[in-house]
Amino acid sequence: MTHPHFFGYGSLVNRRTHSFDETRPARVKGWRRQWRHTSLREVAYLTVAEAPGHAIDGLIAAVPGGDWAALDEREAAYDRLHLPREHVDHDHPVEIVVQMYRTRSGNDAPPTVRHPILLSYIDTVIAGYLNVFGAEGAERFFTTTDGWESPVLDDRNAPVYPRAVKPTKHERVLVDNALDTLGVRRFRR
Image (cartoon, rainbow, N blue to C red; front, top):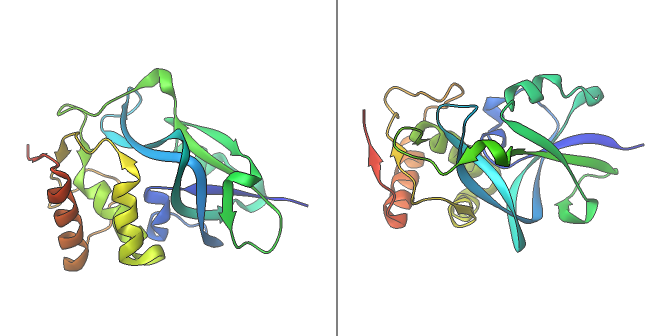
């Protein structure tokens, strides 16, 4: 018997943004993260693009009873795709089926000042990566994600992201230093 799981590669890595209990670190081969704006949302979010020879870290979590309804609603701007077993590295003791979400290509475009990346979203994602993968995992997040030339709205003091997790001082410094190193343009409204 197989058990349905999702692979989260952004905010779903932060366990404080969902109620799925059975989680484990995992890696998916053949993909990279990207920042994209979708016509179905006002701001940019993470998605994935096929990238042979690359891999991204994330979190797998069981979907109890295969009931995807709540997660599909949360990820409404995305399509859910089945991942071949050989593309997912994990330490789960039983056979599992893994799916992940990707934005609908006909609806997405690069982020813009009108549809920016949210700093509160980055903070939330990095808090999850630090918790699951440590500082090296958080650094890998930045190097395995494309689209850092996109504008970032500094909404840290008044988060726009609905599941924002307030960053610690350490998390803020790590995010700010990484964005500075990448030359990311930040702005306020």
